[in-house]
Amino acid sequence: MRLDLSELSGFRGSLLTPYDPEYEGARVLFNTRVRTRPALIARCTDAGDVAAAIRYAREHGLPLSVRGGGHHASGLSLVEGGVVVDVGGMRDVAFDPATATVTVGPGIGWRAIDQVTYAGHSFTGPDGLEYGLAGPGGECPTVSNAGYSLGGGYGPLGRTFGLGCDHILAAEMVDAEGNVLRASETEHPDLFWALRGAGGAGFGVVTSLTYRLNPLPKTVVGGIIAWPYSRAKEVFRAYRDLYANREDDRLALCLLLSTEPYPDGEPVVAMYGMYVGPPAEAEAAFAPVHALGEPLFSSIGETDYLEMMTVMGEEIVYGLQSKWVGGYFSEDGFDEAAFDVLAQRFAQSPSGFSMVRFDLLAGGAIARVPADATAFVHRDALHYVSIIAQWPGDEETGANVAWVDDFAEALRPHLTGEVYQNYADRDLTDWQTAYYGANYPRLQQVKLAYDPQDVFHTPQSIRLP
Ligand SMILES: Cc1cc2nc3c(=O)[nH]c(=O)nc-3n(C[C@H](O)[C@H](O)[C@H](O)COP(=O)(O)OP(=O)(O)OC[C@H]3O[C@@H](n4cnc5c(N)ncnc54)[C@H](O)[C@@H]3O)c2cc1C
Image (cartoon, rainbow, N blue to C red; front, side, top):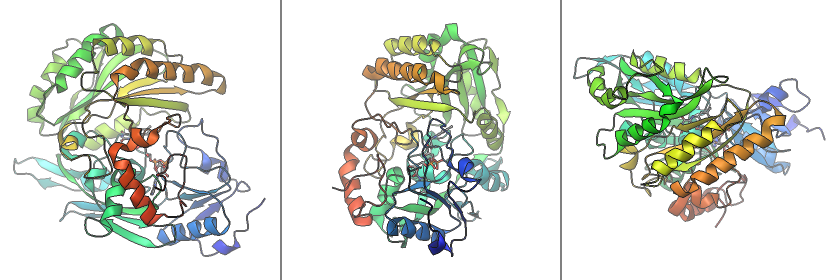
């Protein structure tokens, strides 16, 4: 049935239905395995558009979903036959260097924000070095800042300065009635608590976020260093030891199993990331990494943060189907038996596009926030393993899904059972506990207060109590 859009005549953005040539492109997510076909994609320009789209969906009895950058691993930002409230085009940036804060539209990615606050702004630090102000972003340039931070938000600066959600000072949200609410420590504090960790899980549509920013030298040391796969277990050991009882929270290195050249080459084991501080301190921090001996290749050296993150983002391949499975390692879980599973199983991957990443390094500032201070509960674990199966063609789906599921099953004894909500897995049976742990009942109370009719419902949104 063709929708009558005349009631949306005041809508300032674009309204895309399957009759529109732009519809097909607008519906594609990062994970092309998702084939959901919404009835309407409402590309909003401001909170007024968002309120109008919500009202339209409710009046027509249509389910709705919220879409930012379209990177949800399981596709829950789209809804079959419903209305997609798309805020990906809302990308305003208002930077205030005096308070070291930035207020942004939900759709803009971190690289575009860094361009303004880090590359576009300079000051001299007490150490005489030139600094900029960096946001708490991850490496993918097309992930929206809101989707990232509302669910947590791990990036290379996290261990030093905290998660994306820990940087949020205030949020603007349109609720199910179309009201525009402001949430902060002093305004709707219960909602503010929930948005920081569960903000994408069914309270409303966030239309702006204010973040604190971090001083970061214009020159930092970082890059990627890789070794032959035959040395994988040795590198795992060194990586584990790098963070065992480590008080310094400035070395931000992720571990990666991938192929070189990507995606047609041989398996390799790598570390990538940076030292979050002056270059003069970096040499000592990287010493245990360099002590591993001659690498296959290394780009570790002086760079600038934006350049380093941009180069990493350029390695991301679009247009693939995927399945992400993972979990936090238990305290002693990253052990010799886990090393065996990782080394053997990755080598059996049916697709060269697939990878294993320890890409969510925690500890430091992340662990210093109590688990009930925000909705983000995963504060204790240090390492997260993501097994990411990626493949181009439908005929490869069966083998790749079987590979990632079997791999995850073999690693399960080493993991806590908690799962990062931003790497959402639709196959989890008890996602409530896996994503939110002891914070879930409180989230249900906030849901009752702000969306009592469960308008923002998805297969993994917070349920009414
Ligand atoms: C290639 C890739 C790299 C990634 N790298 C990292 C990383 O380094 N660190 C990290 O922590 N995570 C990372 N992620 C995960 C990413 O942070 C999450 O998938 C995030 O939720 C994506 O947000 P999005 O807006 O781009 O996606 P979408 O699919 O548009 O949205 C994701 C979820 O957030 C909700 N949502 C989005 N915007 C809003 C809003 N304004 N108001 C309310 N709800 C909203 C959606 O409804 C949906 O449930 C990565 C993901 C991919 C695919």
